[in-house]
Image (tube, rainbow, N blue to C red; front, side, top):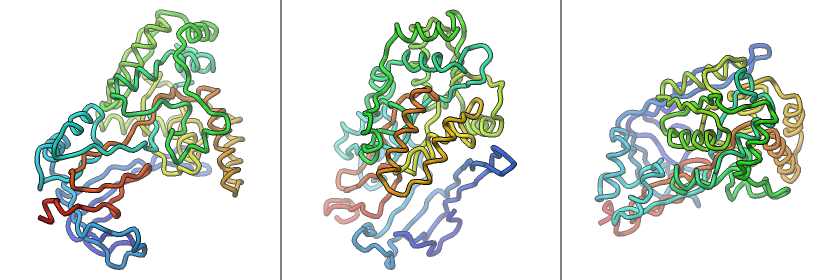
Amino acid sequence: MIDAPGPWGTGPFILTQGASVIDAQRAVIRSEPLACIWQYTEQRSERVRLVANPDYWDRRRGPRPAEVVFRNDLPPERALELVCTGEGEVDLVTEVPAAQAARVEASEHARLVAVDSAMAVAGVIDRDAVDLPLADRRARQALNLAVDREALVRDAVFGRARPMSGLTPPTRLTAAHRAPDRLRPYPHDPARAAGLWRAAGGGTGGLLRIAAPAALEAVARRVGADVERVLGLGTEVRTLAEEAEGQERRRLAENKEGPRDWHVLLVGQGNQSIDAPPLELHRAFAGETGEYRAGPVIPEFERLYEQLPAHTSQLALVRMANRIDRYVRRQALALFLYAPQALYAVNRHVDFKPYTTSFELAETEVGPQHWSRR
C-alpha cells in the first residue's frame, strides 16, 4: 500500500503524487490451525507520479527513467488507441488483450512486446459433484483429453499462449522443472476421452456447467464446444462479472464441500515462486489450504508437498517440483489449458524490458527521438 507521497521503501522510484492502495480481505480456509488467503482489490488515484530514487541500491539496474506517470483515468480501450495512433499521451499499455495484438503490430507509433508469463489458465474441477462422476480420475482425464488445446490457443487467444502440460507455466525460467520427464500437454484424443468417460460411469445427455470471468468467456465456450462434441454432454457457460468472480473465489476458498453451481470454474492464477511452482500453483488447486481445491483433501499430494520445503539444493527442489507436477497431471486435478503471454503496447522510441513474473520499469529507457527528449 502506498497511500501518500513519500520515500517509501528502498525501491527504484519515489512516489511524489497520487496513491496506489491495495485492500485485502481475508478468506479463512481452516480455523484450527489458522489457514487463510488474502483477496485483493486495488484503488488508485487518477494519476500516480514516480520520480527516480537517487539512493537506489542497484545502480547498474537503474532507475533509468527520470519520471514515470501512471494514467489511471483512461479506460483500457482509450489508452490503447492513444499509444497506437500518436505520441505524447501514452507510452506503454499493460495487459493488452490478445485480440488487440495485431492492431498494435500494425501501428506506426507502437510496437508489441510479448513475454511468456508465469500465469496459468486452468479449470477448477468440482470433485464433489453429484450429477457427474468427476470424483473419478478417469472422468477428469476425459475432460482433459476432450479439449483441443492447439485449436483453443489458436482461435480463442489468437496464438498468444502456450498449451499447458500440467500446472507449471512453460517459460524459460521453468525449463528445468519440465525437463526430467519432458511433460507434454494432454493430447486431443476424442476416442480415448469418450472411452474413459464411459468407464467412469459418465453417459451422454448430461449437462456440464462452466463458470468463467468475462475475460475468459471465449475460452469457456470453446472448451464447452469440445466437450459437447467429444463426450456428448450439453454445456452451460455462465460469465462472471468482476464482483461476482471475487465472490465465487471467496466462496470456494471458504467452503471446501459442495454443492456448487458449476462443474468447472476457469481461473487465471499467477505464480511468483517461479523457482518452485508448486508453492503457489499446485497448492492452490490441490493442496489442503488451496483456495481452488474443490473436493476432499488428497493425502498423496500432501505427502509430496510436505517434502518440498525440506530440500535446500536447487536441483533437488526442481526434481521435487517435477514429481508434484507429474502427480497433479496424472490425477488430472485441474483442467489444464494454457499459459498466456503478457502483452504490452509500447511507444516505438521506448526500450521496455519485460519480466516473466512482474511489471518493472527501472531498466526502461527512452531514445533520443522520444517526444520527451525532442
